[in-house]
Image 1 (cartoon, rainbow, N blue to C red):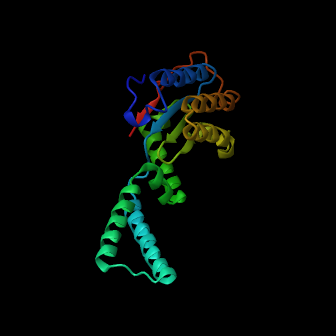
Image 2 (cartoon, one colour):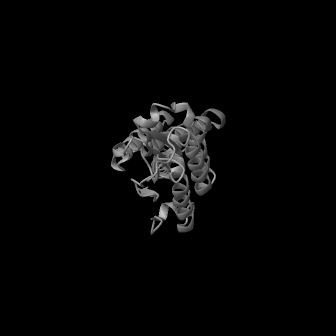
Image 3 (cartoon, rainbow, N blue to C red):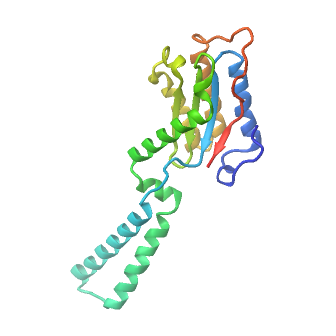
Length: 219
């Protein structure tokens, strides 16, 4: 059970919302022997050179402005003033590139996707999803900074379901992250997940809860 929402997530998720997600997992797992684990992380991209790139882009913009002024108005200005302007431009670009929204634009999407998939794979094993009876674990993973989602299913599920079967789940999770509707996104994805799993993995007589139903939140 989630007891505290980290600062970076509070405008998107409350304790009540986290409880709703956990109830959705419990309700879904009552109808299938599959084990569903929802997880939220702040970011998957470990490092980037976006701040340096931001500084370079700002310097290039300042240089273009200088040349435009020279070519159109014949005004070259003073070298000292331009030097100060270039320093200010570089520092401004550097600081702006450290803002999440700007940094996200500067990191190639393919790099964000690759890093998110790697983080999800690590989370899959850390959560114990590969150790369930029947290999019926499934991870619903959202990386908040990248606004990307990954659904990873263990071998037992993969034998019956194709990766394309989970595209709507991914859409629900990504839409929820982008539109400040994390709870609704997870609830929809969990319900779809249960609908996919139940025909192949109906609940057993005992139907043990092998993994706790709480929402995992990590930096």
